[in-house]
Length: 253
Image (cartoon, rainbow, N blue to C red; front, side, top):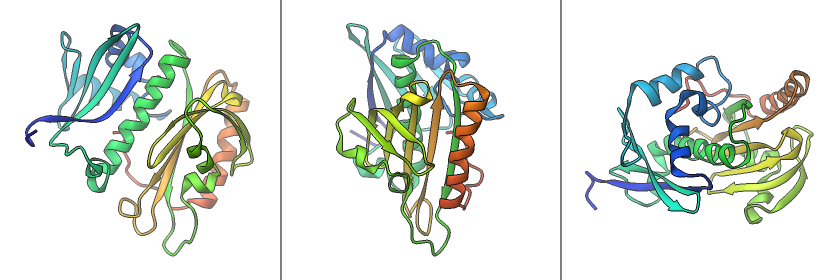
């Protein structure tokens, strides 16, 4: 395959019909249920990426993003299942698609597509409340990256959909099921967050010099303001202590 062709980088299977998945990629009201997190800029980000700078092929179910080498390709697998591939112009099909200058983009898309799959399979049509924390270790710091620091690295040894119960860094005792695992990411459902989703990503030292860093996206459903604000406060306080260096200027994609 030449460098002028698209090659798969990410592939997921969603338990939903292709027309339903396509609509979730095209309707801004549905995109906000899985893309990004609660932020004043979210609506503008969605419009910029998915409305103003996109080339949709309705017949082929391909969504190409202007100014990016990436596109979404949907395939009907039958039985109410859809394959979603993120393909990239010039992708190599090896670790370099996930490392170096590609790390932020590829890990970001992986996180958002897992949020899409979770929203469609667990909470179709439901609104969410989400908070996002990110940072890197201060220079000279000798500490764990987020997966280990939070205490969730052990979940990487479990199969997806396995039940778990553990106490995490902010002090919460969480229970639910493992959702997905990859080299840098792990996500898991949380019963106490309304069958929500926590997705933790480690950033490499190359990406966040000199020691690395990471992020966490916490998605909740059905929590009242007091419960949501309390969870956000606990996690933000813990995060600030462990990852004090804020990542500046980070866009959603």
